[in-house]
Amino acid sequence: MVVGDVEEGAELVVIGAGPGGYTAAIRAAQKDMDVVVIDKEEVGGICLNHGCIPAKALIHASKYRADLKHWDEIGIHTKELEVDFESIQEWKEEVVEKLDTGIEQLFEAHNIEYKQGYARFIDEETVRVEEEHDAENVKFEKAIIATGSRPIEIPGFEFDKERVISSRDLLQLEEVPDEIVVIGGGYIGMEAVTKFCKFGSTVKVLEAQDRVLSGFDEEIVDHIRETSACYGDEIYTGVTAKEAVPEGEKVTVKAETDGENIEVEGDYVLVAVGRTPELALDGLNIEKAGVETTENGFVDVDEQLRSSNENIFAIGDCAGQPMLAHKAYREGKVAAEAAAGKNTAFDSQYIPKVAYTDPEIAAVGMTPMEAEEQFESTKVGKFKFSASGRALTANKPDGFVRVVARESGKLEGVQIVGPHASDIIAEATLALEMQGYLDDVANTIHAHPTFPEVFSEACEDAMDESIHKT
Image (cartoon, rainbow, N blue to C red; front, side, top):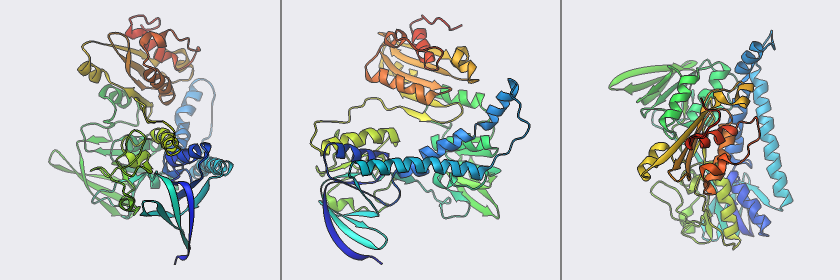
């Protein structure tokens, strides 16, 4: 029962404390705005608490088998191995808690007020916050909606069905399952393969399209399937999943491919077919605030992330694709600065995408095929990690960096599959944002031996000047 009903005011109300929301709040406070942040859960949002961070922690922990095998090969012998998955989960939670605490300390340092509760618009300048036993109205001059997204449910695979789980549930498993069936071969599904395959699970993927990781080009995806034991015969494409049928401690997925019915069994079924904006599902009542949405349910925003109500902004997943935390970070800063009256805009031309598969994949800008369709003549360079001294000394020889440029040498795209792809893509993105050319990268001295040298060598290869390519 809700008791009490008070009212207060703030210059800026931020609804959602995920990557976009907390970034927006801090940037607005830096611009001397009085800020209140509201979220129904912990600070940090899904990314920090139930997504990106815990998932990458488990991926890191799952590498032990490959590391031990390599150590044994080079003379470091381990006689006994015991994996305490409960302790791994505890360590993962410690990482999350440390980052959560850091955000709370930043809020305190910037005098940002945090309210944990459900936010609903009453009108164009008032939000009602409903907590467990209290409710209050908060008047605002400006507001930023940063409510994020949630996993999509599909018929026959509802999350309240026994042994059917979301990506959030997957990260909370108390033990490593023998078998997991994954519905969806996007980056969430394939990252699930990465971590649990390495922990010893058999992971089976059912993908409706003709290949997994459709957001990356075919050569990149083919490479990881060829080089990693985790992406072998248990990936089924062109499959329509029909229903999950729990049977004791197992669950059977009934599916169809090319008119043929098939059944795939596992201990759990992970549904990873995408995410949808929280807006309508969470009862935010944005229509009462005069905020319009697109046909796909996203808030319709301009280059300042301003909605149809000029005093209300939207950022992150609820503002449209791509649903990436690093996009939300940037949007949060822009929206906060615009709310503070600054002349700013979201003008980033290049947003990198990363999948923490094994090996990692990262890409930004155009693929070779996309560039060929747009320009009369193009240049493509490619350099393998197997020719990198740093990659060999780290026992990470698989993969390559590929660069795409116009005939003039202006960079248009970079694709990476291999070690530290998620790190190297930062230099590639900067080069593209700076309108860089192949020789800009090639003539920049890269420390040796390092992984980013491979990016420089790929640029040299596109100019037919690579020193180390055989």
